Image (cartoon, rainbow, N blue to C red):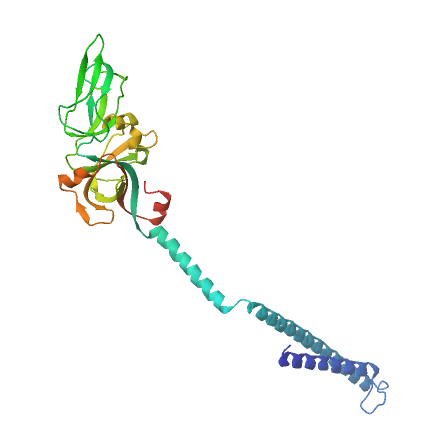
Length: 331
């Protein structure tokens, strides 16, 4: 309790005692000289007045004492509250304020800020218009395949034979110069006119990537969008860049993807069952295993990169709010 509070309480208690003493003296009619004053009417009136005054002083003293006790309780509560507040270091309050401000700023940025949005696509590397199927000219059974994957072939070269029902054979001829990508119909396979026997890459034309986008994702990719991609082969890791050349308007099935690959399995280019949209990416230059960047405008350089190498690309789709980027709400 403060010095002021204790002084106020002592004064109040003293006033209360004085009031009680005065009231007692007035009750018994004690005069200042020690003689009884009850015998005279004037003395009785004086005693009554003194009694009333004493009672008023007593009441005033009690009120003052009650007020002093209330002030003392208030002061005590303030001291306790002050002690409890000191349990929280001032520096912690400052740090908490900084954290709250940072969180508020982050929430605001996520709602109204923008980041560069990209779409991840998977596909394969191709040359020109893509692989060419070398098809059987007749109905029959594949008798032999005379080439292996990786072999170079010339236009008009025999790559296999088909046994025709009733006797005889027919040659299967390569339609273009190129290299064999894979065997589609092994010996013993029944074929009809147009059935691919082998798939050939011409190695000519510009270097492209065929990327496949799930058709349920709409059209987040647009023509002319910048593309950065990674592709790998047994020999090296290659980074390539380019831009979106075209986006297929109609979905394609896994069977159609297989035909695009010259009859080879669609699993070389896509995963799942589709359907897909074909995104054609024209590639401009390459960075091979950390070496200097190589322009792909030259047919010689482009042809050295093998076809059907898996490609993982990121296509820029513009700026979106960070919250949309996290939730995919921009699709």
